[in-house]
Image (cartoon, rainbow, N blue to C red; front, side):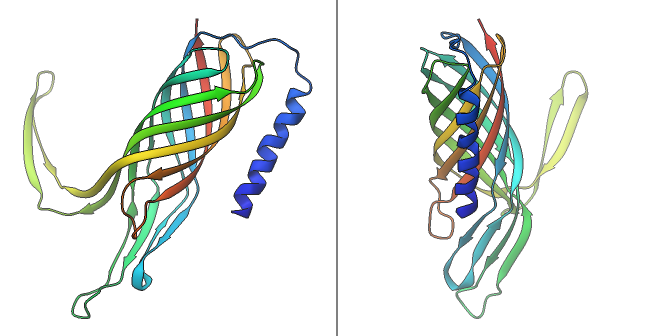
Length: 223
């Protein structure tokens, strides 16, 4: 927590230095824009009963967004995010007759989101607050059923068959709140940096998992 707080102080302290040197030129409102974004998720550990735990490593994923700037301050849109962090899980058996369970593999996490952003200033540099409501799927990549084959016809390549192994996955509503900075450095391009806290409405070790994320977005504006 102390590390995250220190990073936030540096992140927003830089805004004070940058905005103090800016002219009064306003951002161009009433535009649509799309972005490619890199998402860094901090390592998280979730402790369960009897020494059970889930230890998720830090990793970087990517995403895309499409936003409409309704006014000089408000923007609304949607986004998609994906990340594949490594994790280690240990489950202590409740019954002495059963074996403890441990696994090391990767999570596949993707989410579809509805996003809202409020820009505090009508300037090329501006801080903003953001919130999201979405649907997140977390695939553990742990096989939980027998494999089966399926086939399909591809007009260009012919007849294909492959094997599918079902894995344990959970889905639920996700909520995000964040703070960030935006810099419109040209007529067509902008860059955004965001810190977000997120929570997914699924059961992990008896609680809803939460994550701390840092994001850099490269924004292209359509007029």
